[in-house]
Length: 354
Image (cartoon, rainbow, N blue to C red; front, top):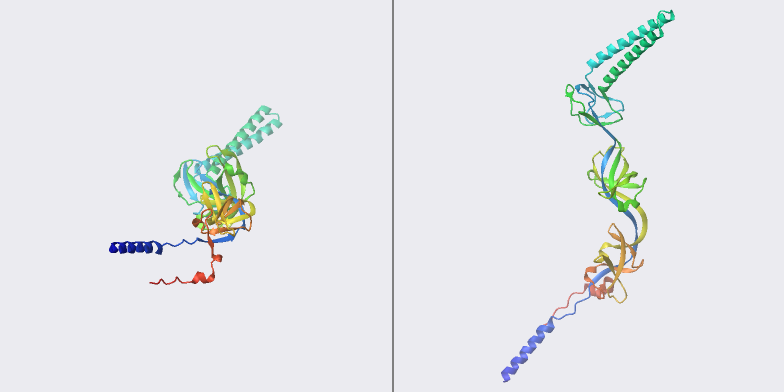
């Protein structure tokens, strides 16, 4: 019996030591807090657009004919009215010469008939008939001259020529492209904006555009035109902005991102990491003297540069938890770095005795 009692006492002692030795109170989580500040916000409309030349035209052969000369270089600048290419025109020049000869002959004949009429040897009908013949000859000459002009292809405006794809001596059919002339002194940037954001844009408004080819370099311009018709399929409106391009860096066909800034304002701002989501609602933890987490619902606005606009729910200068919100729940005690005594921060753990 004595042996059994001793055994039971020892077992109870060991059990008590095993349970009580590891049981410690969990410390309150350590978080950081800062006062609610202010920041400048602006509503932004983001879009993706395509760069277009200020003016661009594809010059094509008007008739089926042989090219006799090319007058531009690949990518070269051509002034307005410069000859781009010349097509064969020997037959047309021969026809023009014949027409001009008929004009001269009909003019001389008209002079003779008028002289005879003055002497009473010709009638008014004879004079009128010869006038008609002379007019017809001049019209034929003009037509022959216009036919020759169609075989001289000129630049309608100043710009840069495309890469050449045809050579002198080649026979081209009507409609064959010979060169593309692009005026890139400025760039038209077309993009679309959802109809829900239509009230955020207006003609004359500034935009900032960027192209991946130039990294973070901004290109600034203004909205020139807003299409008066909304696409019924996409429910978006087409917008055209104008970007100056003095150094010719931007090229037609470039894909560019567009940002339109509007309604600039100063408002309360909190770091994005201080917000807690619950469905569609957003909350922050307010710091009170009792050091217990108090979750407060806030109404948020624009997200910008790592901070979030606060429309309502808290007041400027009010302290909120900015780091460590994942450790908290409503009513849970917490600690701030300022609450921990300096000695306790650097104290080493006590050695356990045996």
